[in-house]
Image (tube, rainbow, N blue to C red; front, side):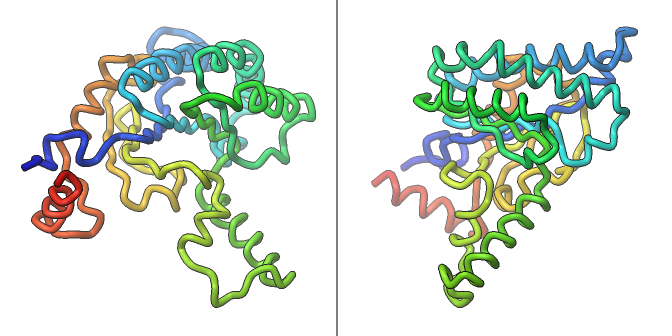
Length: 253
C-alpha cells in the first residue's frame, strides 16, 4: 500500500510557480539601490532552475513583472525592462544548452519592438528544450482570463465555436499556459501571503508555500525545503481524505 501523504510519486511535482518578492527590501537592508536587488534576483534564477532539473520538475513559472508594476517609479520600470532584455540576450544560449525551453507570457503591447524581437528570438532558440521556464512579464491573472473571454467571444461571433460548447476545458485552451500542466506548488518569498493576481485560473488547486526570506536569498536549500513540505501534503482536489487516499492506492495497483 502506498502512503499518498508521504510518497511524492502519489502527487508528483511537475510545475512550480514562484512569486519572487522582496528584491527592493533586500537591497534596502544593504544600503543599495532597488535595481541592485532585482539584479541579485535575476542571478538566483540559475540556482532554482538547476535545482528544479535535479528534482525532475518539468515547469518553473516566475512572476517577473506584473501588470500593476507599470505604476512603479519610471526609473525602476526602465531598469526592470533593461534587466529583462539583458537576461534574454545573456541567458538564451545557456537555457538552450541546458535543455530549457523559454516561454514568455503576458501582454506585449507596451514592449518596444526591440524587446519583442528579443523575446521571439529567445523562444525560438530554446524551442527544443525538454523542460520549461515560463516568465510572466506584464502579466495579470484577470488580464489572462479577460483576453481568453475576448477570444472565445470572437470565435463564437465568427461561428467557429458555439456558446453551448464552452466548457472549462475550452476556457483553459485559451489561457496563456495552455499546453502546460497547472501549477502543483506556488511559492511566495519575503513573508507575504497573497496571490497578487498571479495565475488565477490555473491555481484553483495549487498548494501554497510562503517563505520568510527575500527572493535574492531563496537558494537551493530553501527551494528544497519548500518541496519537502509539498511532498508531505495530501492533495485532495475536492475529495475527502479517505477518498483521495483510495484513488491514489488504485493508481499504484
